[in-house]
Length: 118
Image 1 (cartoon, helix red, strand yellow):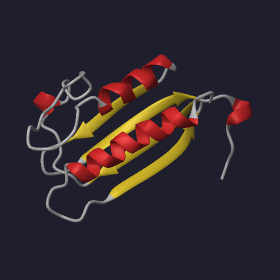
Image 2: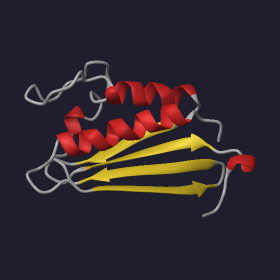
Image 3: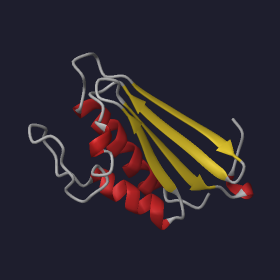
């Protein structure tokens, strides 16, 4: 996978910080996973936050796509994450329900010489 560490760090930072910012009242829990699936590297970031209504899922990746006015931020983190992933030929998607948290799944192109098994 030819992907900048800085870009990957920025994507993970945005997803993790959103999971913490949009907490449901419980102690925030963030689960991060990675696996190789054929020619893709699949990263998943799951939280136990407030979740996102189905009607709003298409808005969260918009620039300034703010769903909550009471939470501090610029509403560009998910927009930038999607742009970075899209630019590299990858894909980012979200699974979420209100009160159930959110799971962001990122698919990145993997190159054999850069993939290691841990």
